Image 1 (cartoon, rainbow, N blue to C red):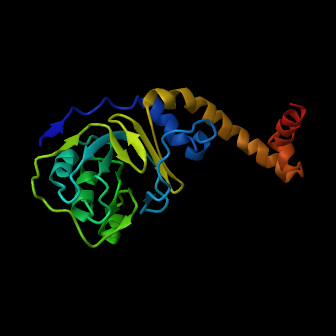
Image 2 (image 1 turned 45 degrees about the vertical axis):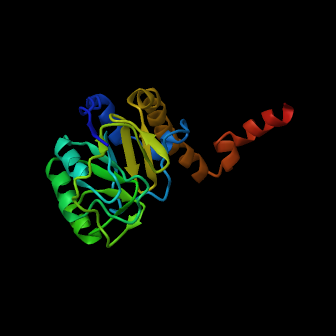
Image 3 (image 1 turned 180 degrees about the vertical axis):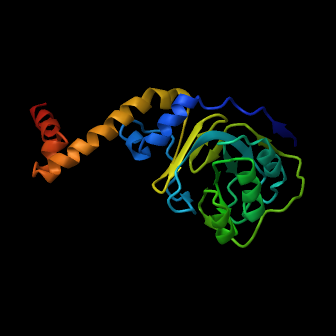
Length: 223
């Protein structure tokens, strides 16, 4: 048994981060298929929208000692991604951990498990994405295994340190920087076009004509 602690990944380029704050995250789903977390991992702070670099930690279920260390490594805007080894009974995040993450400027915490102190965390204003809640919490046991800044599995998705984590009331996406750089301009163009589609619908144009679904189906029938 041993503990692994790797350096924090490079920050997300500032121009990309600015675009991510502008784009509608579901629009990225028009152009991409991978990295979408289990929808059951949801925000416990309604209305939150987050975009940040993943700092990952793998804890041995009941013991959150290493996660506390990972919180101290967070930089402003980071998202702490917590893998619990499948434990969905012990909550590793509550008021104190959320407050510590908020103080260092974290944008959110994502847990492959549960959280506690829901009202207190909401008052702090830190978005926490989790499967649910629990009264039972992790302990500080100092077990000699776990890892910081290694690939982890959360919500059915492998998230690597430095991945971009995007989240809102609709769900979560973890995506490598190179992939989101490839997609972001298309998504922003699509967002702009969507307003024109709404105008056409208001003018009485049928939906399959507005979305070119009729054209797509006609081509499929010809094939």
